[in-house]
Amino acid sequence: VSAAASARAGDVGLHTYCIVPAGLAPPPGLCGIDGAPVTAVPCPPLACWVSAHDDRPTADAGAVRTHNAVAVAAMDRVTTPVPARFGQWFADAPGVAAEVARQADQWLELLQRFAGHAEYGVAVARAGSAAESARDVHPVRVESGTAYMKALVRREADATRHRREAADLAAWLRALVGPLTRDHRVSPRAGTTGLLSIADLVAWDDAPAYHEALEGARRSRTELRFVFTGPWPPYSFVS
Amino acid sequence: MSLPAEGPLSPEDELGLVELVNRVLDKGAVISGDVVISVAGVDLVYLGLRVLLSSVESMRERSGFSAGR
Image 1: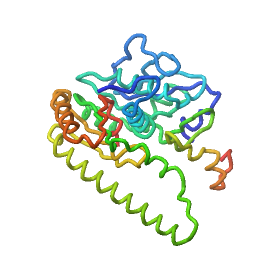
Image 2: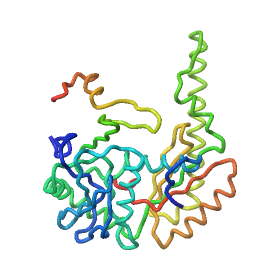
Image 3: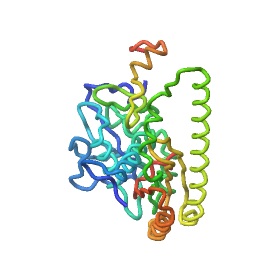
């Protein structure tokens, strides 16, 4: 049983935010979830930013935002942290240090790769696509087996068209910004959340040109809705 | 470019919130080898923005695992 699994509700424990190079301390006064002070647990040659809580933090919108904000606070043009996934809970600092040390080589390699870079996101949806949500949530209601099979065929055709459109769009965006990125991830989205989501790992120096290229994409495809996000700690490039 | 603000969400902010949740809850380093997300006192193994699919206890019951195992 791991330290995370053994620390159940009701225990005092540590919520983890990110892994950073040893010696990088949280800014004075930095608060984490529920206003708890953020501290660094030494895990030489690394450190892990944590906050102490009486219970495992609840994953509400505020906690998710705060978790990200703490990882963002560890970012500058030189250092980019390895962000931790929300929900990892340790009984004490030695438990954190032991688990971080166990994969220290991997974290060091990622810190080196991320240095000077940040993750940027591009979410794309069809303009006015909100009506599609209902099809994803409610089952198809039909009165005969034939109608049911026809509905299945129609749904599969819609899904195939959706995947093809997302793939074409991803390739088009890749051609526009590919030279300005070090790495990228593409995630097709279901109808409820748009066509696709793209994560790009971009050097700080290339960010202005990257944004300019994306704004050009937005202007040329008015039938689509683009949302640009970032800079993020590089969540999408950890594995 | 910015993170969505607190309060009522525009369609753009809603997409931005999806992006935030997808990253923080579904990506990032797994230090300990297991991740548990708790919402309203329930330990979850999967959390969607609109649909709660299952809880750890439900998964245990369905798979025949006892709570203490």
